[in-house]
Image (cartoon, rainbow, N blue to C red; front, side, top):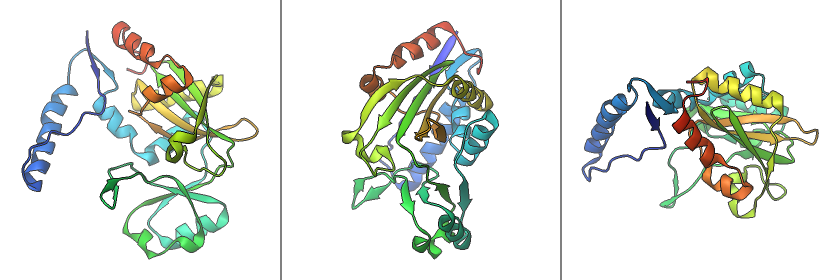
Length: 249
């Protein structure tokens, strides 16, 4: 049986001009990528096209609701008036629809989820789609990594006032936690919806213990979490690749 672990392939550098780089990237994507996506009898972790479909946050939010997860009120718009009205109705955060490459003064940087108020919304919103979401009054976060049908969860605690824990990696504490059975079932339904065998899910946890779905990275990071929380994710991935597909394949 063929197996393919599609793990964030790097672009091929051509050392040519910008137009040649774009051409080579597109040819590689449709050539090598097309071959890798058409292997007969192959176990994928996960299929490249399934990963690509699942990267769209609007599709994720819809799938999460269908799966039975609790999702914060969300607005995706390029209308400044709609954005102002939404932000005025409740505490709101903004987060990008795609975590693409970004630089500040020539240095790599991340665009983290951050609070936004109605008065901060201006005409620049009209230039592209923006994702606004009701801010969950969380006391902690959970990263749940699903490999096949196994779920590995860690509670992540950040310093008070931190909205996006990724902005404070050096100040976080971790502990493994059990995933509630109803959440586990919803995660498996979510993955089946997209045809995925892997997903790294982020949740906000409130004082009453409720898990609020924020997003899923269908090809997300997990190695740091394995070390920090003592979760045997590597073994689960190796077992899946060696022993066969889950029900999602």
